[in-house]
Image: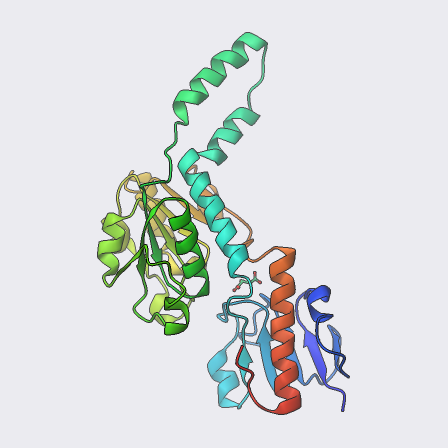
Length: 305
Ligand code: MLT
């Protein structure tokens, strides 16, 4: 029997080629597919094709899939936890340095410089004063969410000499044992927010986390602190962030979810959802997601990934 897996986004061919030799047909224009394989395409409001037996997201978050509707039809939804954790961690580490050394505003200042050698020297002198940064060792990082990505971020920050606070009321043994013993596990989100110089958010977008970083929570953070969000935009109350930045109650916001409002703000750095965008992560996610589907369609059981 040949199973048909319909892709709704570009999925790494290198990853798909890692599947064992099978009769699977994988493509974006298949009729009556047995399974759907997607990245960020939204399935909300999209009729479930009658032929579909399973869905897999090549990524960690599943907020683009109406899971309850699929479950009600007995259709499992798979994701690829951990497959892109290193990629996200690396970008968060980059964000720590971006924030600490004012890299984006300083680079944009330097990019605009022009004139003769004397006026360049003068401008460089003023830039040196304007963009004085801070170093990471000894600073406190608060990590909200200790799943595969949060744990990697926390451990990397320990390696950078930071003091790391980790918060996750639902942390599982699977991830907890991987956490460096130098990470202080806090049970109170407010205390993490009050103590951290930089806060990074790594929770899935579900009803309970929408707006988690609200105006009240932002008010607890230090004026000099920076918020990093590579999870999902709506976990942070965007209007409250802009208000906090404008009131001088927050130093900066780095996130992976550009909006016109955020992009206007000089203390905001946005990226076009790049957290998982490395060749390696795309390959890992494609392979893991397709392998979950293959196993389910062939064996009829859910593979423990
Ligand atoms: C994820 O949820 O892991 C990312 O959104 C994956 C992606 O960028 O496609």
